[in-house]
Image 1 (cartoon, rainbow, N blue to C red):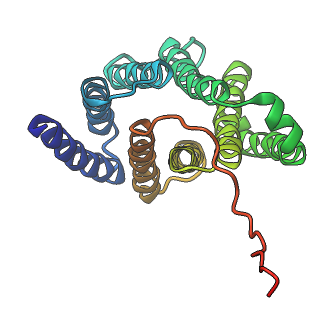
Image 2 (cartoon, rainbow, N blue to C red; image 1 turned 180 degrees about the horizontal axis):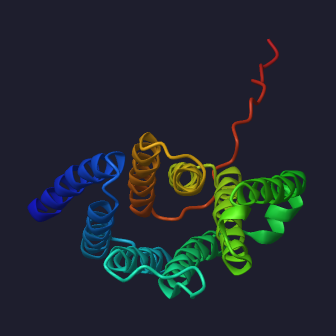
Length: 248
């Protein structure tokens, strides 16, 4: 238990250092530190989580591998514009796979028949909003990418928004602490990804590095917290039932 507490404290300290490095535009150091943080977080989850989820563990492992490759990519020669940047495609595909694993994990917890019968209108609204948001966000960077890169970025943004939507549906369906923590985690992931996109391709403001890294750290904080809760049955919404008064 002492080792567990030490790792948690170390993770919090390293998270603060990571945010500081990103805020100072120390991208290389931040990439290396983020890979170390995720390896420690994965170790913490594997060693001291009572009820493990193979999908959440796969998410952590996949995301960690992507971060390790991202750190390595800073030490590789710069790829000319007329050449294929394999690291770019591989890293982003791994991020997509990681988010897809969280989506699959969420879907497997849902009773889809009940979901579609009770939440038809919210689902339709979410689909429309997702298409609108993904198209809008991806469109802001269209001029910065080749066609294949744009398609990959569009798919990336689509998976992020889909994850957020499924987390919201899960919360509306399940209505408990685990689903709430998971929703908060996905909200901060979405914010982090959007701000990171603006930081790299739209605005040259170093303060955005601080913001998106802070949101990312908070996102994984909530995701880890939800992983410590078991999946339970949905909690019925509060119903104000009238009090029966006996006839006097």
